[in-house]
Image 1 (spheres, one colour):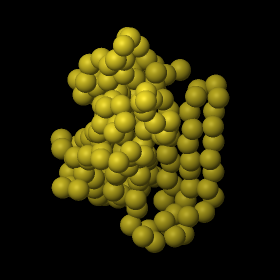
Image 2 (cartoon, rainbow, N blue to C red):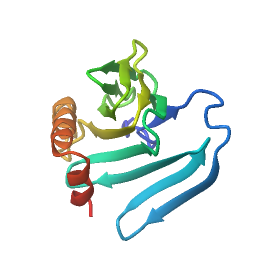
Image 3 (tube, rainbow, N blue to C red):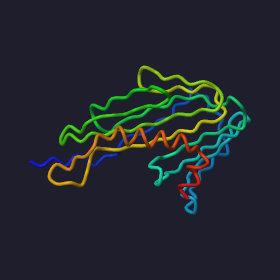
Image 4 (cartoon, rainbow, N blue to C red):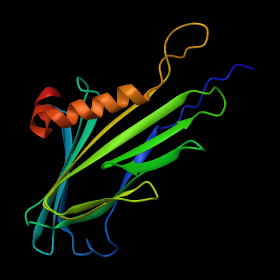
Length: 185
């Protein structure tokens, strides 16, 4: 039969804080601003105000996440990715988590990368394909994803996505958060 691939999500990015570290959170607010196509949250925990902002920047082919805290050194967490598909690999190098795999039924290659950029504190690429951030003032994360799908009969395959995804991440990092934010409006 014909292999159509899978109609599942690409994967997920998980942010894991130390257990109990946000136990006193209060004043939690979420927002979605349709005029600026931006979502976010804010809350207070032990006297520190935390804000998080998320947006997709279509012109630059990236999704961007920014975590801020009102106190220096207040951000410590682990970043990981998961896949809805069996057999994906996860690596962490040069402050980038890469998820890569091939669909089992039609052989389509997929890849996603997320670059973690802290201000202040420290960061560690872990052997299990995760990244740990410790004592940062703010953190920007830039993500891109792609496949080797091409709308070309009969095999519908194009180039390996690694080059394009890597290029999108590098270009977005060089532009910086403020420019990416402006580009998506």
